[in-house]
Image 1 (cartoon, rainbow, N blue to C red):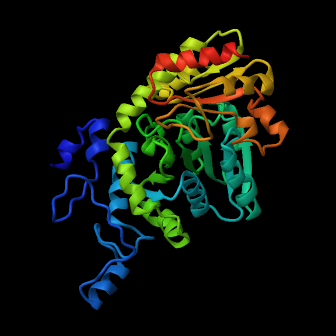
Image 2 (tube, one colour; image 1 turned 180 degrees about the horizontal axis):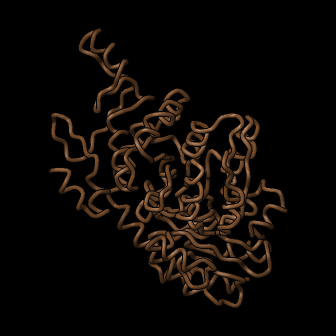
Image 3 (spheres, rainbow, N blue to C red; image 1 turned 180 degrees about the vertical axis):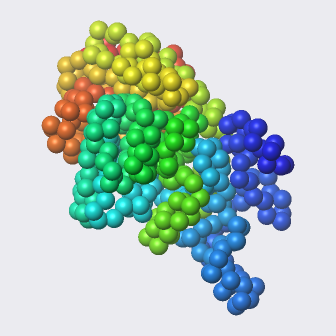
Length: 397
C-alpha cells in the first residue's frame, strides 16, 4: 500500500500495521528474529555493511534487529516522529537519551516534579559528571522563562508528572527552549502512546516506558526514544549500541502484539479513570482527587487543550495521612498494591513509601507527596466494580 494511503490511517490502524516487514514466507504475525548476529554473502559484503548500513541491513543485535526495527518504526509512526530506538527499559531510555546528548559543562533545566529514578539520573549521575541542573516548578511558565539561559543545552520534563499529575504547558516550554537552541526531551509515560502530544507541541525527543501501556499486561520491561532521524541514528544510536541498552527481539515482538490492542485498552482505561474521578470527587474521606482532564484538577483547561484524555492514571489524597491511607489500601480487593501503572489489572501505589521513598522529606513536601497520597492506575475491569471496591475500602477507614 502506498505512502499516500498510509498517511490517512487513523491511530488504531497504524498501531496494527505501521512498519510491517514480512519475510519470504509471508507470515501474518510478525516474525521473531532470535539471532545475535547476521551472515554476509562475502567478505566484500561484510566490509560494505560495516561501512554503511542499508535501510534493511543488520550486523549485530546490539546494533539492530528486524523485529526490533519493526517495533521502532511502528512506535515512531504512532508517536508522530521520524524514527525511534528501542531500549531495555523506560529508565534505560531516559538515561540513554540524556547521556547521549549531554557533556560536562552543559546546562539542563528540568521540572522538579519527576519520577524518583529520573531525579537520580539528573541530580546524582549527570551532576557528578559536571552537568549543571536547574529544577523549576513545571506548572509555572515564568519559572521556565527565567531558568532557560542562552547557554542552556537541554530541557527535560514529564508531560504529566508522576505521581502528582502536574501538567506542563509543553508548547510554551518548547518555544522557550528552542529560542536559545536547546533541545527538549519529554518523558511521555503518563500521556500514553495513543494520546501523546509531544511531537505536536514541538518536543525534539519523546521518551516512553513501553513497560506501561505498550505491553500493558505486566509481562516485560521496555523503553523507547523517538525523534528525528538525525538525532536517533546519530548520537542516540551511537550511545545505546555501544553501551548495550538495545531492546531484545522477544520483547519487541511481544510489544508489537501489545500495540494491536493498545488503542482499545487505553481508551477503555482512560474512560474508567475519568469515571472513578467523577465518582470519588467530593468524598468526605478524601482531601483531593486529581485527574488531568477532570474539573477538580487545577490545570484541567490546559490538559484538555493539549490532549483528548487525561490518561489512565489518577491521584487521590486520603484524609488522615499514612495510617488511614494504609487502612484504605489494605481493604481493597480488586486493586493490586504494586509500583507499576498502566496495566490490564488495576493498581494502587503509595508513592511516599515506595517509588519516591528515598526523596528527602522537604522534596516530598514541595512536590505534594504526602502520607495520604495514592497513585491509582485503572485496568480493564468493569468501572462499576472498581468504584464499588474503592467505596468499600474508604468506608473501612
